Image (cartoon, rainbow, N blue to C red; front, side, top):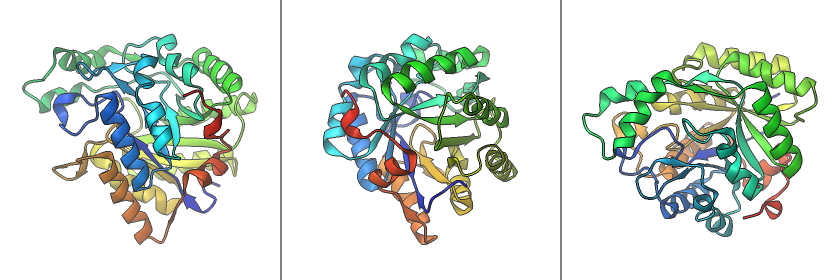
Length: 311
């Protein structure tokens, strides 16, 4: 089943969803990303999930040169597992999305298990003005955007990044069908256990952040993968802490970070990623759950090791 005894905390440090106007604490420059990632690791995150931002205006960028301004510093300062996005940001081509992972050969990358509507436009209602013109346009464009992850795209990533670089994946499942897609690739032996299955709740276009959906996704994952997977839960926005706590009680690992929610609690912006990591760590320890170290997470997920990356 889902867990071998300890909870892996993943921290998604900046992402490509939130924009600079939404929080003064969202890390945008390479220096801010490095500092907050290191802080999250020190607070207890075993995995750091990383995107890059254009330091000039905070927009998502796939540029490997920007990634290389923070990846070596993070590796030097922590033993945490570096997990680089293959989702990138809205409108990026598959080649752009893979540019940084192919350059850096990380231990782990995210991999979305299906094409989907990915609606961010409701956030337009919360802000009257934006710091940069691109922010409003990016949110509005999500009304008519399909986040593309075809079977061919997934096969390409599994072969050219997974097989070629020894990179393993955080399989991002935003709906029940995504679990069956992952099972398809398992049947074809294009993926190998242990699978790190990240079930994601609360994104407009994906499965809703309801407790019934958490139990259902776990039941289907158990049915499809048995003891061949490690389960993790991610919930967007205000659902973050309640649903990941529920997941942890049920046997999941957890993901926090300013990519997924800008808040620490109702009406309170998180001042750093480390604050969110510290909050969930406190909750887990109060539930008598043990936190996995990076070394333990590497063993649980059968990763190649930090000495085999190229950054």
